[in-house]
Length: 201
Image (cartoon, rainbow, N blue to C red; front, side, top):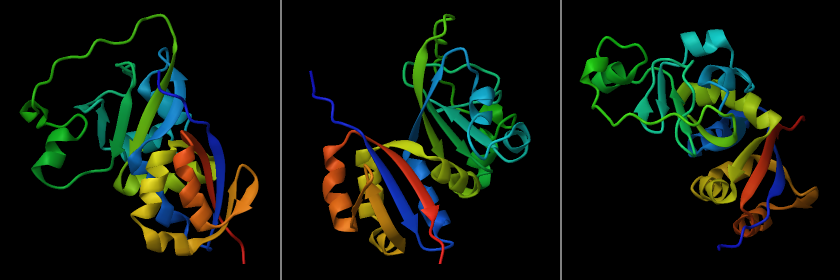
């Protein structure tokens, strides 16, 4: 059995008005615990930045485990659900996959997935946010705190080296470190509870 690495808490303070630059990390997928008795709409409304009105008016495209979803009152399916949200996407593809689209008949038919057992059990949903959804809801999530795999955070920061210039202070498990130390240590952890906030002044 593969050894489970420990988790860590990471706090980043970033230059004023730089918080939005970090919201694209949400494309990588954050992990949120829930249970199988919770439908997708209820799940989303419990997340900072989301409301029923926002989901109805702004979230145009929803994928559950790679399959387009029209109705957020559906339960989660699969043992490790992956929920991806996007605002309107351009072109014919965007029109086809948009929820309640008149072009939904053009979607490739996939094998229907069995819903999880009716008896409620704990699950971890991987939530991915794209385009304006990440930009608008991301700051609320980052300030409240997200759980993300350490490998995903490491990849995110390494692929955007200029982003580190916007970081003013770093704490790992309440210990102040520099960027180099953060990057070298992320591989030692399984998951990260990450908080990002704008510094003041």
